[in-house]
Picture 1 (cartoon, rainbow, N blue to C red):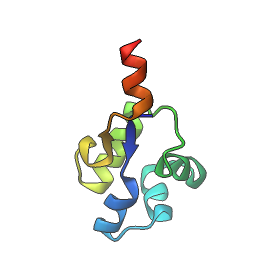
Picture 2: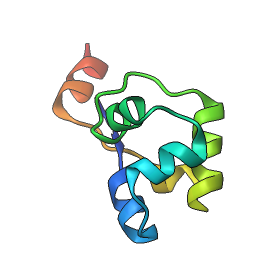
Picture 3: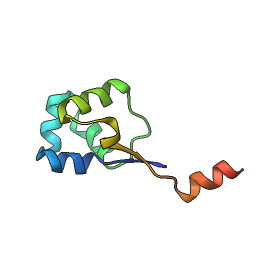
Length: 77
């Protein structure tokens, strides 16, 4: 997937644990961990809004688009 999640970097910059963020946002630690590791296939805008609010950041601080070979080859077809 061409979307990369930088949640771990943002958490490190904010000196906040994943557990603390989960409590503040109201998301289970398991679901937040799936998001952090990049295994999530989707995210609700309400979740993104809550993350940005609690981390005092912009969506682009959390999500980054990087075209990979698979994405480029799919576009060429």
